[in-house]
Image (cartoon, rainbow, N blue to C red; front, side, top):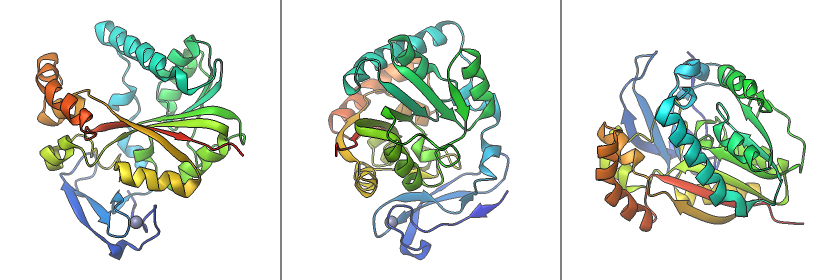
Length: 287
Ligand SMILES: [Zn+2]
């Protein structure tokens, strides 16, 4: 595995302009601690050092990675239902039948839910095994990421990145590519872990949102707004999720009783704009 350190992706400050933020225990397959550092100039939190672009694949062992695991039975039904609910909530962001792209679409469940209600959907996803699963279901998904796939300029009315931007080596490069692929008036929907959430502060290094070394960056409402400004996108809204997944997951149990137990506090955190998951809506201004 090759490790690298990089200047701040948001403001360009040198590594020496950052301070230690959090140290995490080793994960497979390399026995080493991971460290996040915070840029003192802009506040961005980044994994430093980190596996380089060629080495990062080892941490996504195909369908073993939780996001790619095929579900069955009740879990599959619940997830499909949640995706239908989600799509219904998001429809006001896009014109009827709009052309949508999901970046980091995994096995394509959300894309399919959009496709089922009449959108023209396409996806890109770096994991070949996940792409194969999506393609077997008839979805138009290609292997790659925003660095390797050349997207047609000004072609999409919506681009979706669901818990994907924190995984890329340069969010600035990714957001620049995303902005150029959007039509004027189009919207980007970004789901992100919120590093300034109550659950992150509470659980410290046990917070599930760290997920090192797969998460290379951690955003706050302020740093994601700065990123959007840099690439010419306008922040429309940030919605904070009341779902208790990160409280329950960080505490070590994702069972229904644990989720129910944590729900009041996660709902309160969301009401105070400080829960662990945020949905950022950004607009590409019309010319
Ligand atoms: Zn910075």
